[in-house]
Image 1 (cartoon, rainbow, N blue to C red):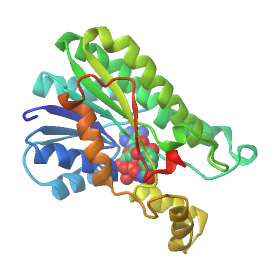
Image 2: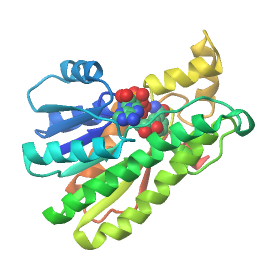
Image 3: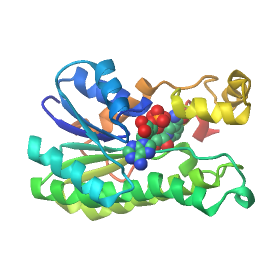
Length: 252
Ligand code: NAD
């Protein structure tokens, strides 16, 4: 797989950058969408090379989503692979303590953002007659977790959107799958650790690792390898699937 045009939301983040690197290493061009110009520039410096396009955009804002799709088409004429990846964890609070506005914010980024990406990328892929979409769900798409109601609800919804989009898009030769990572060593996980044990992230880190059969956190690169496979033609008969990248947590 070379010369593909690969669009990635949350492209300045840990998993987004790792997916970008995997594609750059294989001769593809990446378009990174994220909230802040500085973070995107830092990602570009980090990744290196010329085949990187940056777009400041907010996945919760439909005009912004339309723009990131339109700008990619203007520049490259197509979107071969779309990683619908931006997300936040939000505050760690039980249902009775979570403000509606906090719940709404998590849902608007993690779920509405994924919905809007699908809504505006699928028509372009229909025009092309092919395409591959990989949504970033989570192992929390299958389970409950006390103290994470917004995140859990938002990722269950991503699982539902993935399966529904896969069924709607199959006749157009478009595949839609999801990755379901858990405990991947990025800023998001660091934030969760700091919230669970303020000032002592390693303390909650050790507790979290005990719940992982492999006994360690995953790396963004380990997620990117699976995401790359799902995006590629090597997964040509795979659609509507959720791929766990969780060190065995889902098996437990
Ligand atoms: P991260 O915080 O490093 O990256 C997330 C990126 O999304 C950031 O760059 C952020 O700026 C961007 N973003 C947030 N809101 C946005 C918006 N409205 N518009 C555009 N971009 C926005 O975290 P990560 O671990 O790389 O997370 C990537 C995805 O992986 C998320 O969907 C997350 O829920 C999922 N995930 C992560 C883990 C983990 O353990 N790290 C586990 C399961 C799922």
